[in-house]
Image: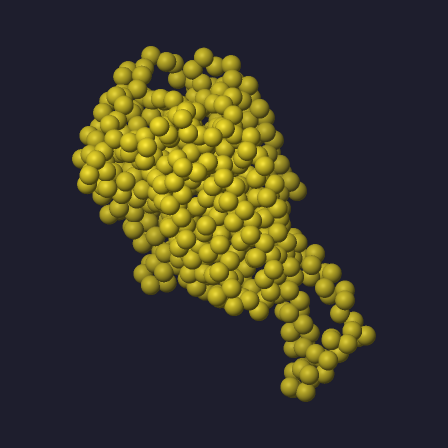
Length: 510
């Protein structure tokens, strides 16, 4: 039912294995965010509206979300290494098709293919990089892997912005080609393509159908909800109803199935259950920070896509250092302590951002993001270690698939909620601020007198006031969302301690 257990690698082969699986994960995660920056250019090239252009993101997100929980099922039948190699090759081909797309419809179809074949790359890279290392050093392996998943979404806008500005948007997809080929060749050279034992288990077709209905309707509703005004749209309301019913039916069916397509029984394990909740909700808070930051910089402070990406990319500097450092010491320090430090640092980063003003300088922006870098390194890695600590055999691929799915759902919900709340709250703040602008307001009178002396017309003066109020309204909305993200992270900290120390029972330890 499963392939022979892989032996740990040594010497230069260990270095190459680490590089291959880390690079495969990095390439896949990067692709989620790198295309976002190019959306306006893509829409212009194909002469479509920006709203239609968002299907480039939605199509990928939906197809990937559906296939992430199926990782364990596929790996059991194809083999973990074979599945990873096949997924990498097909993801590379799909990336080439995206770059070559002659029409928008072909681009969307190619993005769907990318999501389908690439979904298993992230959880399998996590599973396989762990198996490259001897048990005593698997904490470091997990730290290296977690670092790639942290840095990639931060660097995505920066790389995407540079490629779009200096080359063409198609290079946001072509960039995957050399790396995809390199990763597939290295993994095949190191491990070959071991076949799993044949399985006589029946395929859970009903489970697959319910999963597709639940995930597809949920993801489309999340991606299009803000654009269509959520439940006031009959389309979004219908999708929400289908998703809710499908999820309930899916959970009930899978819990009773003899050979479930997704092993929900893993939630009986306290460490897996605790880490899954923390990863899902923590990712929700993290993506509020990740999405609103560059959005505010570009729309309100006049930063270009590249410059805002540069500011956000500083988050990855300390994450690159702290990820492997935390991983190397996770067998000495309780993973729950590292996770608590990580959540606290993320909360501090959010709290600092909650105090920004429209006059904030670039150094202050970058310093807050440096602190955040420590936090996210201490968030993903120890929670992944706790998640995997009670898993055995084929449960590992299933568990990593489910964990990464919940992390993606948290990110999707965080993105959707953050953008909606940011806009709606800014409108309310604008109304509140405008209500205080009266002829009896001394500051308002002084501004009017000063601008009149500068030769501005009455219309220009009112436009100036409106722009100033709008800028402050979005600043207040941004501050409040950062504070919300920080409070969520603080609230999750006690939950971490419901889990058991991960060492001595599982992959990580001994």
